[in-house]
Length: 205
Image 1 (tube, rainbow, N blue to C red):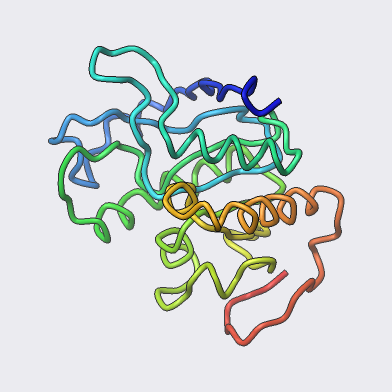
Image 2 (cartoon, rainbow, N blue to C red; image 1 turned 120 degrees about the vertical axis):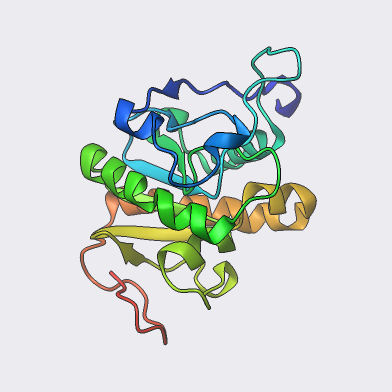
């Protein structure tokens, strides 16, 4: 029953010390929470979003924000277990006010690449236009790449809408769920050969 379902607070992954002390993105001065990643570090699906939302309320109590709730609901509807995913971000610190977004994403990209090298997930799932534009090409949009495999750092990557967009426009939920099913299907599909073709000059797997 849907009314019995409750989102879970995913276990937070401890960042390496050199990353925790990094201030290249410019967000350290905002004193926002540093979140390296959440979920199962050994999961086959590595989910990438733009930046972390709050994990605690104003009183400091742990809670699941709307973005995480929507992601988990979509995963549930798609039949993807939470232990099959790990969630991380382009920017590792939670911003609390305006910041130089392109600079911060570029500064943090090395951390993301280090995570992928360390964890070696089988598949990547990027959520939102910010992610596809940061990892693939500035002119790309999720709506044009849904249901297709691209590649980042030698790893197959699929894309879908950001959970916040789905939350604001519930009509997108069915597409979001289908995209999650597509990504999960890559665990049992040979993604080493072209599955889809497109006009982009970027590598497709």
